[in-house]
Image 1 (tube, rainbow, N blue to C red):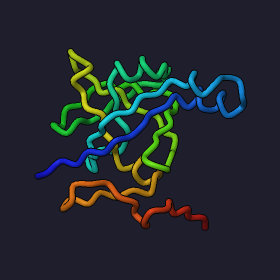
Image 2: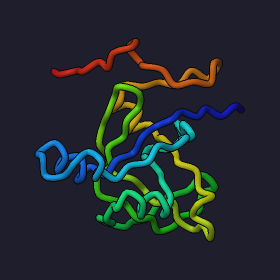
Image 3: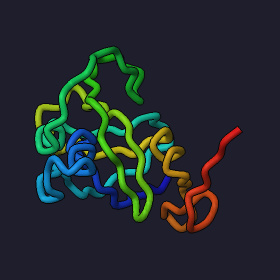
Image 4: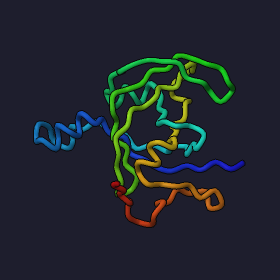
Length: 142
């Protein structure tokens, strides 16, 4: 089975809000651009501890998570992070992957909830992420 990666930019959502309000300069927004594994088996955005620290994200809660190998572990969930893919953006919390001795080795996973919010889909044949409804994000309201 093939793997699909895409480039995303992550920003501290609190910093973005302060920048929009003119309280800090754009250069003060903590951010990083990463190569993320598109994981349709994961529901959330998953980052490692090093990225959490770089973005200055606070831990909001902890809970139990079931991993792909059916083991259950305690996870940490962050305050909101802004996720940018090309000209699209959304905000979501991030899960810190548990149980890794070297946190830098944990890949960033882009799960289905942030992908849905960004109106994205994965083309497994081309191994690329595309807009689910073309080049523009589709907003739905009922």
